[in-house]
Image: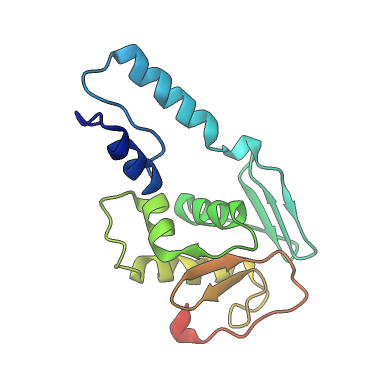
Length: 161
């Protein structure tokens, strides 16, 4: 929300990552309509198809995870982390983006310790061998990547959890 209505200001904001741009003054109905439009663009758990691989099955609608044939209990944060990684399957997701998605903009993106802890816990729960992950891979300096091709585990150093 801003009072700046210059086209260049709008272009800069949208190119910088803003999903929308609304100028003051605005009506409540317009704001609510923009919120509804933004919510339609975000896939919910009920819209994600189940993930199935030989060692990992995830039902997003029912929030159920089965790893290596056993049900796994994930905390809400662990489940959201897994969901965000799967939404970007095969592509690296930056530390900053994951931190923002899980804890919001008030969490400092340079504080990666909590994220490393959650990644480590998630690997212990879903990976056959957390020291040689098949699904959640560390992308050094960048972040993490979910790889559904479980045929080639990669060696991850403990310091890169």
